[in-house]
Length: 138
Image 1: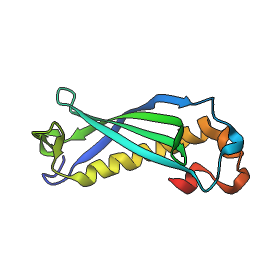
Image 2 (image 1 turned 180 degrees about the vertical axis):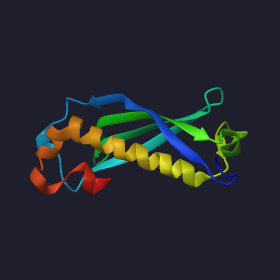
Image 3 (image 1 turned 90 degrees about the vertical axis):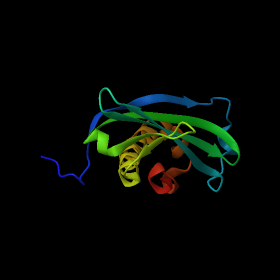
């Protein structure tokens, strides 16, 4: 039985949502000092299934130029759902009782995303030898 003030999360699914490498990039122009990541996420709520869906995107950048994109989608079962999800705000965002739970779900997503980045962007990271990996940056 769940205590009233305790919220539990369970990963239902986690999968690659999308992946792109812009093949018009010239690898010789990549600079270790300029390569970095930009992140964004969306949170959607499915009241019927009592789940929260997080879509986490990261953009691989070389300075101001985007050179690739990786996206992951994860679905989490929340218990007790009605204690966690308060409702939608006037501007369309979901309000929750514990932002720390959202932070924890994002932490889980970042872990999955790191593995996808290594798999999908390995030829770009190899360009720098052992000097840069997604593990250093994330």
